[in-house]
Each structure stands twice: as C-alpha cells, then as structure tokens.
Image 1 (cartoon, rainbow, N blue to C red):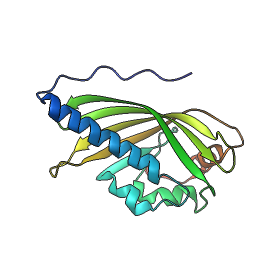
Image 2 (image 1 turned 90 degrees about the horizontal axis):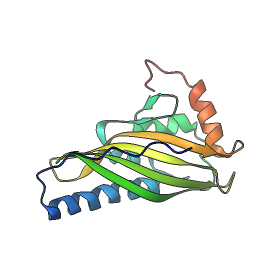
Image 3 (image 1 turned 30 degrees about the horizontal axis):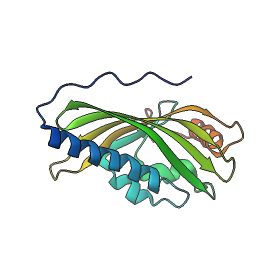
Length: 166
C-alpha cells in the first residue's frame, strides 16, 4: 500500500515565473540525485546535493550524513543500480522551502525490480539560488525479499549508531 499524498502547500508570494523556476530547479535536483544514485556513485558528489547538515533517513529512523552513505553500503554496492523516477509532487512551505514526494522504481543486477517506493524530501533554497536537500527520507513500499535493498536494510539495522545518527 502506498503512503498518503502530501498535503497542499502554503500559498507564497512567488510570481508564476518564480514558482515555475523553483519547481524546475527542485525537480532537477531530484532527478540529479536519482541519476547519480548508481552503483559507482561518488559519495562526495551526493553529499554536495545536500545542505551541510542535511541527512538521509532510513525506514528504521536512522539518520545518515550523505557523506557517510558509503559506510552504510559497506563498500558493496550492487554491480548495477538504476533509479527510475515517476511522479514528483512539490508543495511549497515558503518561498525558500518545499516538501517533495517522489515515487520510484529501482533496478539492480540482483533483481530486475529490486525495490520501489517513495522519497520524501525537504528542500531549501540557498542564498546562491540553488535548491538542496535538507532531509531525504527513504520510504520503500515494497521490494523483492532477495533483492539488494533488502540486504542493505538488514545491514542498516545492524549498524552501530549514536542517538539514531550514523
């Protein structure tokens, strides 16, 4: 069962052109994350898509700094990984913050349809006009029990953490 839709956003004082530009930049950020979230991802590049204190949150509630994502993967990403983004919903909280819900399907060499679900994001506009992730929550709706992501979740659950942060 899929999760609930995002609630409607807050009206902002953005002009239609400003809002359209923001939506394009936010959607581009989401697609860029999906594009570099592959088997040979450069963790420092993924981290650059986040604010300095930005976090990834796994389904069990553990928060991981994007720069430490390689630690969670244990140095063993799949040989092949692709994220296919389908629906992207952007709802503005203010002129410089939005909440996003993105539906995705993921393929790996382990299982053709390895996992599927949503990313729930908080993105913020930076002083230079870029939009970056403040928080990305991984919300799987399903996956193959023998898939790569199922193994990743098992590793995350076993990972040591301090107060929920790795």
